[in-house]
Image 1 (cartoon, one colour):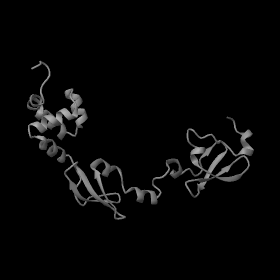
Image 2 (image 1 turned 45 degrees about the horizontal axis):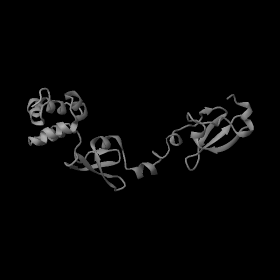
Image 3 (image 1 turned 135 degrees about the vertical axis):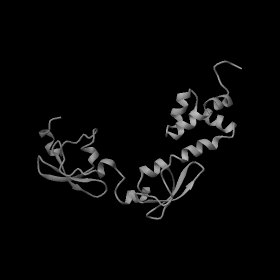
Length: 185
């Protein structure tokens, strides 16, 4: 056997306690693998070969602070699915969804509910731009289809425009066509 390189079983016996302590502390398996200079797969393999993979799973479950019946935004936790450490949830609209713990804590509702409520579907378009000015443009109020009613302060006319064409870093429009000579580029 080569010196300096441990087989999975030798690695396991030498480091199992340290790995489990790190898992219980909430350190990711990627960081643990980097710490030991091995791949995540090699660490999992060493636990699997010695029939102790369940110890990592048990250590991880101890970190989870989600319980059946908990409510996250519009979602209610229905059950825990051990395979993959996922949660079965039900949105207020009735849609069932399987999510990881981090996905559960990040999102507040299913995609369709968020879209219907206007919480997703166009970043800049959904932000409140009322009263903000870019060049001669001034945002007045939201319009249909994710556009905004904007006023050109050079001629006081109003238009329906996409905010990304005006306010985003790549926005090129600083005024209406009639007033373009009034704006410094």
